[in-house]
Image 1 (cartoon, rainbow, N blue to C red):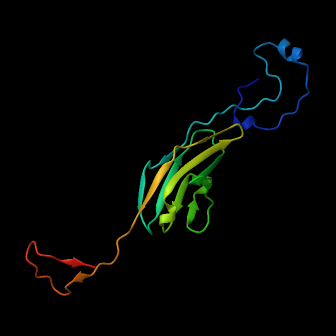
Image 2: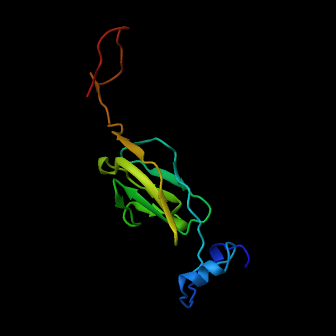
Image 3: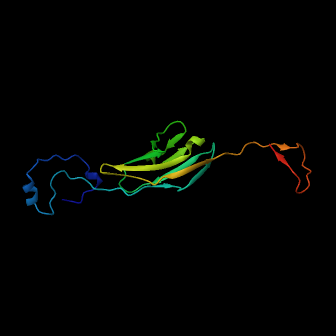
Length: 154
């Protein structure tokens, strides 16, 4: 029998035989329902630490192992679905969140799956910092302040 790969992941039908029959085939025989044992290694979210300014865009990618068939993104253990401000690339490898708010802060993970295995990345913490607000200078007008004197921003 040739080496099995992910292309062999189709249903197989067989006839059940007594256990003594399988044992009589020998150690190099395949008996039962063959499948591919592609255990997925741990994926990795990049960048590993993310700080984004409120109302800006969050961008992250998931580095996936060979054999990945499905990729899911989680935010604080809730599955993210595209729509609204959340965008996913084809294949879900890239995550984009537009107009980030404080609600988008927290832990993000990606999870990879195939028919026989699944694995989840280590969580990456996204920190959302407040953006710059408009500032006014008091007193208004040209600044003619001595070095070291007070200046008020409101």
